[in-house]
Amino acid sequence: MDRNEKNKYLYIFLTGFGIIAAGTLFFFLIFRWSNVSEALANVFLSIRPILVGAVIAYIQRPICSRLEASLCKVFPKKLESFANGLSVTITMLAAAVIVYVFSILVLPQIYSNLISLRHTLPVQLTSLVNIAKDYFQNMPSVLTVIDEAVLAVNEFTENWVNNILIANLQTIMNGTLVGVNIVKDVLVGIVAAIYLLASRKSLCRICRLMVKAIFPPKWSDIIFKETMYADTRFAGFLTGKLVDSLIIGVLCYFCMLIFSFPNAMLISVLIGVTNIIPYFGPFIGGIPAAILVLIQSPSQAVGFIIFVLVLQQVDGNIIGPKILGNSTGLKSFWVMFAILLFGGTFGVIGMILGVPLFAVIYDITKQLVSFGLKKKGIDEDVPISINTTERPKSVVTQTLKKFTAKKQEKK
Image 1 (tube, rainbow, N blue to C red):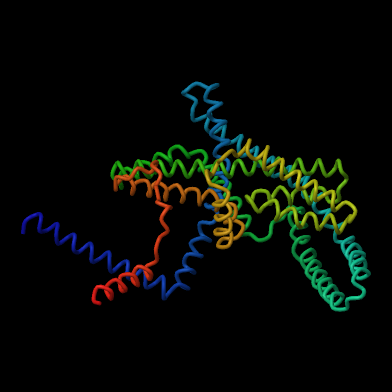
Image 2: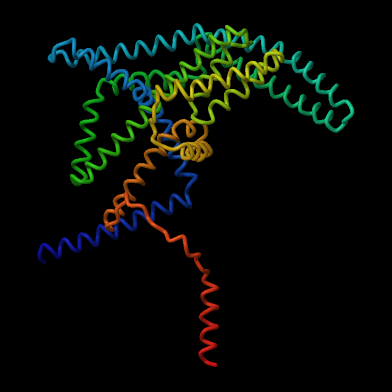
């Protein structure tokens, strides 16, 4: 048996084995999905601290890289590893200081706002309900709906504020975290983030060597380009959005203090956090914030709504474009489509990460379309001309005319 024949049988064997393995995997995915999902959940729980560390490292990587580049200009080339370690240390310490300052300065004010809201909310709601009842006093059906809505809102608010929100805030402010698993995830995640930041260059080099070893040169270059494109989109979008939301939150807080709006810290944090979500974020944060102001001070509600609209216009036209630019390369329609698609599938995380992820998918699709057009010899820059002077005829009309013509020929 010669070598070519051996390779032929080996190819047949590997093909058959691959078909059997793919069929077995498909069977387990369809008919044993509960077991597969349970196994995947166990794997996710096992590597969750590493994933937390990877997210922390990825968010801090741009800052760490810029800091290391600045330090390398000061230190000689022999101390490059020292500059790397020092940049990682400064980045992690800066993040720890930010978290500590947030915990010390922001959380107590949010807690006091919630406590005051808890006491004033029933009184303010009662006054608003009395105004509404006086207005609809001649409509008994509307009064019934108002009473039922007020009862449902009171029950939900009391349960959520007392049993969930305030309890968790008290736990955090006392310096204790809920459950040992959270402590383990955070500590291991911080250690993993430090390791990933310190060894990010060597890890990238290992990944590049693995890709070059597995794929041919042409495909490895394509993979590198798309990976760099995805990294640029994700890093630019996430970093820019975090900075933009921080600026909007701080600006909202000081403006609310100037105009004496109630619950300044609570509403500013709400506006800043929801601003991370593109397109729908201002509405998600602005509507409940306006309701809170309406409950606390009805006379200031209209002024607050105008203030939020002006703030979002400043963000959308001045601050956002300066920080983000066109970081995704998507039109407004595709941004909305990505948020609805991934937000409906993966919730809030999907709404935040869906835009850069869809930008990567859009770019890959665009590259495939361009490759297909070039393969067929079609120039994508040349516009496709369509003759619009003649009205297209339907298939039914053409068939009837042919049938009529044949009948006339027979006669």
